[in-house]
Length: 138
Image (tube, rainbow, N blue to C red; front, side, top):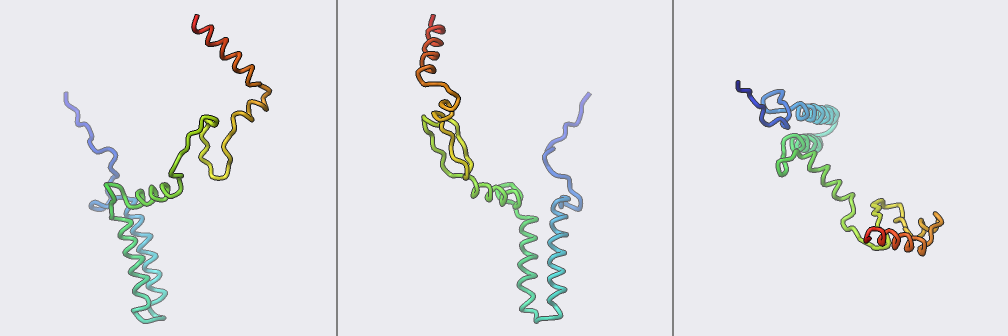
């Protein structure tokens, strides 16, 4: 008995031709905004005044809808670019601070201060570590 195994299950379903539901929504919203700009400016000013805003919004809608960047949709690539700009570029390692904290506003944790607040002395820690290592070595 043979079964047909679906291929390409990550691909979105198409609605009209090769247009997905998400693309259709973007086209409808962008086309609506373009049409509103056109209707609001066509009777007031000349064509060379209303044509650039209508063209900019219309072309940006088409770019957002149909352009793919390295096999990703334009919106996904743009969001990844924003995430790249927001995240820090370098990470620093310090032996005194083993906990990494990537927040911009918070200060990194100091392990020496936290152990002193808990009432644990360095000598007690070293003594316990030596006891543990002796136990494991035997």
